[in-house]
Image (cartoon, rainbow, N blue to C red; front, side, top):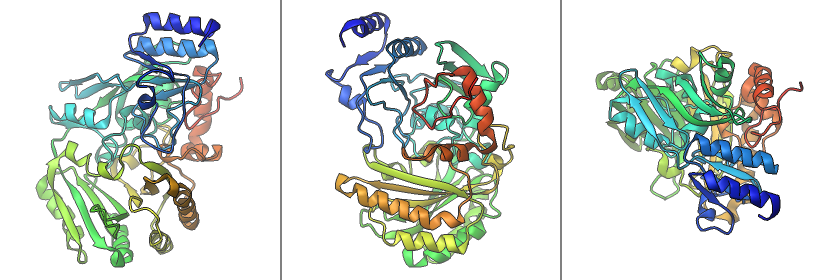
Length: 456
């Protein structure tokens, strides 16, 4: 980088405490990678920050040079918008500080922390909060996008447990954002994605929880229709402490054998878990039952092997209010021709605490009991990309007659239209667009599921 921009880079490097990487530097190619191997973008500069001051300086450099900005936390989001092509990637992955305050039941963690790291520190004090279903996911991106997970029936979404955040705004201000300070911005952060600034640290409410009863119950594919109908009836009356995801999956032994499965997490007492799970254990003739007591951090790793870093991902999802027989049949028929043994069709059950928050109390409007219908297409051979994407789109189209308008922000692929973002927010979109205008009128933070700032 020569000329004035080179001078600006030299000026940035003098004070920057992290690592600055350009395309010719060692470590650049590894740093630009994110979880989804479909994403192959080359930033002009990767600014690997160590604190809020580095973030402020990196954003100032991007503004001064007119370069596009992307923000990388955990880098797990399927759309891959953590990486810019030709711009500045502000990388928080070195920011790993975690502080637990058991007296106040609060935990503060920096923006580069993953849920595996978060859960490990919280578990030292017998504490936990709702995190993702995959432990390698970053806390920041998941929380800012809502944050569903195994404990949402008991404690709500990750965003519902956010107490405050340190935020670097588009103007370079460092704000403490909470219900008492900048409450409008705090409202927007709890589900509004990365549209409003860089969350350099986040403070969560954590809850007493050392152990859960969790695991997998699987049935042979010929029993899939009966299994999913049972799941529909079973989940109509489950207690808050029990989360059950239904799924069509392939056997984890690499054989590619299709299965109908239930992934369970019970956050109550072992005695209550035994009683609540008995109907599920006794239904049909399961091919596999692996359910038992385990520390919550272990529960959060059970699905990790199915979503390895660098695998190729293309996902689609929408909410459904009920599991019609037609939707069950469409999913089973499509799964029979699934091209990848790593792909799954998942039903994420929303109930309990997550549904007792008003649809406008946070930007996340999806507060009615129901299910998120999710197709997670995963494969490793680039030659199979076109076939897997085509199958995913065809399967989603077959399910569309049964889907509602709601969309889950963090599951959107990179080719979704603006209407999909509006569907993710529903009636809350206009309020978010007004807050976006006040805090980011030039849309500096646009490499995300973008909210367009309203005209002044």
